[in-house]
Length: 103
Image 1: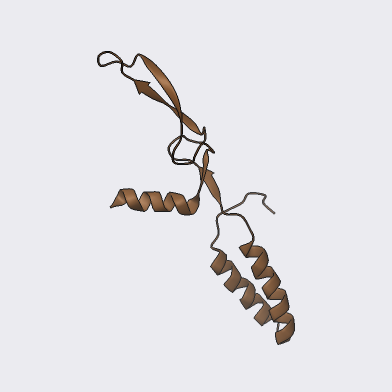
Image 2: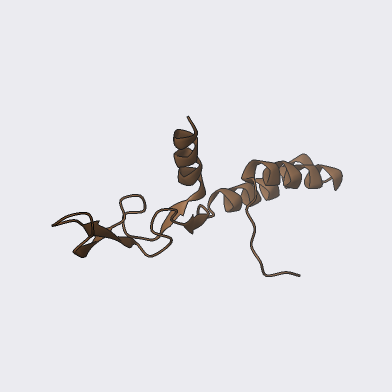
């Protein structure tokens, strides 16, 4: 068995679990109680977090400051406004960002 985690669709997992219980031909009461506890366990899982696409997981980035001319004279470290300094964002938020940029 692999220890690697993967992204899954929780609704498809719930449907698969329900189908499995129906195939086992358990009584309706058994099926409902057991599958309800499994559905709640699935829903209670934390959202998938991925590395921030702006700061690449660092939580901050260096901004060049141009005091004189065309070359930066210094760099200022700023907290990433996409991930709020955590270095991680949810997959749902990433997809929302991508959808906005594609328009």
